[in-house]
Each structure stands twice: as structure tokens, then as C-alpha cells.
Length: 444
Image 1: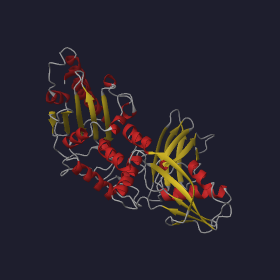
Image 2: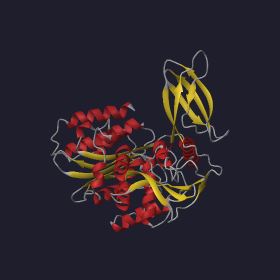
Image 3: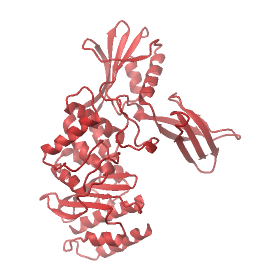
Image 4: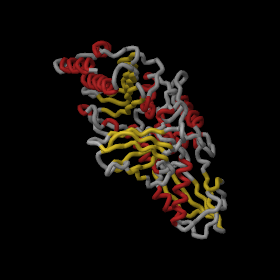
């Protein structure tokens, strides 16, 4: 909407002419003049030193936080898994031509890593087992929306994580009136209804047609030059097993029985492993809002916390709720159902978020939150660089931001803004967030 942008610009010009230190921001007037539906926005701003509320609006109402939820789950995950935790995928020998792959649900495992592990398998191998007990078989979260199944930002996840659970396709423009060429190096079985034509611009629409089969993709639009696209894997176990089979056959290993599920025995002999450290993952989630990594770690941490062989959503939720009780954060009204904020069944208040941020104001993990010009703030809030650390969220009609702000006067604050005004575009919602934070920086 042009109205909100014009209003914010006018208010910004006014702010430049006042003494920032002597004027307390009247956010209610700001919001009224912006045109936003004040019943659809929730705000909480508190002093980081005293915990005193500086400004609040609808701060007790329950609302879906989108990816702001990651500022709630990541500190709990980090505390539970520990700074030395590694995602580890291992291969063991049982002798007599029998091997076992023990999965670690590593969200950064690649087909190249898998090939390294399979290189330990001898050509005369008769059987390969897979231990996938580290996570349950549920590959999508509660309340995740079925029409998002082609969204590369929220692929399915689980013990069989591989290649970010995405299939890379290369599409070549059609020649001489023929169809566009689709290259699928993964060899994962997909059926294409290829309606792509050559055009001056590349504008593609790719969707799944489950009325035919779960592996059927319809490709419409135009293409001007060779283009790479990514498709979420619809069956991550099948994809993992296919890439394992390809790696085995490259070793001249042809299994008659296929891959078999089994648990690792104490007598199995360790051969090799591929690991990735948790530090990179935590940073990836906070800076880049990686949903698949957040969900995987939430279950892994829950399993460890509850001393279970298999990590689950419910164990992650118990871990989170117990953390709140331990730190005396009132979580009696809120609801957390996943680790990333993708589910609209998550319900929190901005007051709860700022209380949580207060408890974690000295937590080193919060230093991974991006400042202006980094991660999800790459194109936002440049005047506040190094004065702001924040997590953003965008999902359906929701836009949100929460974190830590140091004002021009040197005072420190925690804040959370969640906007669910359906009549505003995402860009307008974020423009309003940015204005409020700039005003808070100048005037508080």
C-alpha cells in the first residue's frame, strides 16, 4: 500500500527535526497514522536492564510467530545438545560381507559424503542394513500446510536427510519447436508434464499433480536460458536409498535383498563416519532461518533431553516447556508444536517472546542473530547496523521480527513485533517494522 509508505516517510521527516533523547516515542500515534489495523498487530518493547515494559500493544494476545519462533527454540536446542555436538553418519562392518549405515539425521549430509562412506563397502558385500532409529518417521510438522509441499524453504525432514532433501533439475530451452529438456542427475523417479515454451523471459510454474501420482510434476511457463530449479523430495527415504544404491553399484555391489532396516549392534565394527558441527547449524538457523535444520535439531535435542533412542516432536516440546519452567518464564498460555515456526498451530504472545529474550540476553548463541546487512536482514535496517540483532519471520499473512536493540542513547532493549494485518502486503508490514525500530533507536 502506498498509504503506509507515504505516512512513514512523512513521520520520518518529522523525527529528524526533534531531539531524539527528549521525546518519548508515541507508537500509538505512529500506528494510527500508518493505516495498519491495530487489532492485528502485537508489540512488546522492554528494557533489557530492568525488564520494564516501554511500550506494548496487544502484547498478551496469542498469535502465530512464524520464524521468530527460532529465537525461542534455538537457545534450548543449543543448551541440550551442547557446543561439542556433531551430526554423525557412520558405517560399520558385521563381517561376512555385511555392513550397517547408522544415520545421524545430518541436515548437511550430501551424496558425496554418502559415497565416501560406501567406499568402505567391499565388492563381495551381500547385505547392507540401515539404522534409522535416531528420529521418528514423521517427515513434516503438525499444522504444516499441504499446499506448501513444493516450497523449497520447508522440505520434508528426518533420519534420511540428504542433499538438503531437494532434487536439482536443469531445464534447457526448447530447440526447433521441440520440448524443453529437463535434466535430473539424481535419477530419482519423476514424471514430467512438460509445457514449457521458449520466451524472452524465464518465468516457470512447477507444481505437483498428486491426482496422478506423488511423483508427477507439471511444468508450465517460458524459459529464455538454461535454468536450475530445486524440487522438494516427496519421499526422503526412497531418495536416500536410491543414492545409496547408486553408490553401491559404483563399487560393483549389487544387493539381491535391497537395503534392510536394523539396529546397530555393540559388536559391529566401526569403519568410517562423516560429521558436521552444530555451530554451523545454529548459525544457519538464526541467520538464514533454515527450517529443515531447525526441525531436525529440535527432534534430536528432544530425544537427548528425554533420554530416548528416537527423537520426536513431543520430546522436543517437553524439552522446551521444561526449559521455560526452569527459567521461570510463564508458558501457561502459549503453544509450541514445532522447532521452526512453520506451523500456524504455534501460538505465542509478544510479551512471552520478550520475556524469553530477557532471560537469554547474555546467551552467547544470540550473537548469531543477524544484524543489518546479514542473513534475513541483508536488505533491511542499514542505519541500525551493529545496533540491532534480530530474527525475522514471514509466513502466509504474518510478518514478524524480534531481538535486541541498542538505542542511540546507549540503552538496551528487547522487542517483538508480530503483524497479521491481511490487507497489508509483506513489504508494507516490514516497512512498518523497520520504522518502529528506527524510531525506537532514535527516541528511547
